[in-house]
Image (tube, rainbow, N blue to C red; front, side, top):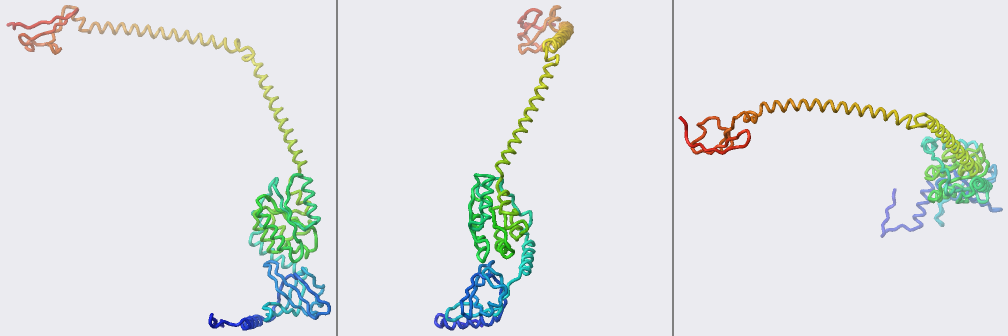
Length: 406
């Protein structure tokens, strides 16, 4: 049941510590798996001490081990070893610390390690961390190569020397870390994070030389695998030799068989690229020469044709005769049409003259109009003293009606 307290009824530290000890004691004996981070043997002492660490969560707990229990472990326990411990949690009231009192320690065997790696591999594969579709291509010529390796290691030397032999101007940012042991996972993950945050780093190479399965175990750690999967920068894994396949190889964007192979993969060979460029330039020159030769031959063939060899005789003269013929036909056609049009005009003019009032007037007739211009057709339309206009064949007369007849 929860313990009721208040500012007025606070619980003493000793009471709180005693309750914590009671709660911890109820857990009973448990089997705990971890990695031995520190091991302290005191000559002649009945009890030894070690620190058991969880490399994934970076959590540690102290363990007290009776001398007989520690000496019973075969092979002898060393720092970095994976073990399972049968222990009872204890809470020390005086120091306020939690520790485990071990009654049995069993090293995790190679077979079980491999089985656990296979189970972890299946889980990560089911999450899609090893899918080829999520892998990114490496840049052709990276500005800076991030290198995670052991300090002064042969792997570091192989990568740097072979990369600079291929491309002397290549730049490196080297992160020296522990590549085996209890701190390897933490240091490698931190180094990857630092390189991934650097905008100048275009590719990250994680490398170390060969070793036993236990030596390479950090590079199959779940925390490291997930850190590489979350990395935004392409990652190259170059761990051990060709036969070594830690889980890091599966999640990396590219697996190199050796550190030397990694150097070949991340930078191009300046000699090979220069040779390839020269081959391309040679092919381009040959292609241009062939093109010029074909076009020159084609131009010569065109110039040798009669129409181009003597343009006046072959082209201008025939066309000039054709133009003259067409011009003469056009003149004849135009004259014929003009003659027909003239005849039609004469006939029309004759008809117009025959039907024109002027022709009637020429025969002695006249047209009488009132002052408004209306033609007078009946004498009743004109009154006495009305002014009249008389149109003759030639000229006009003004007349006035003075009287009526009859």
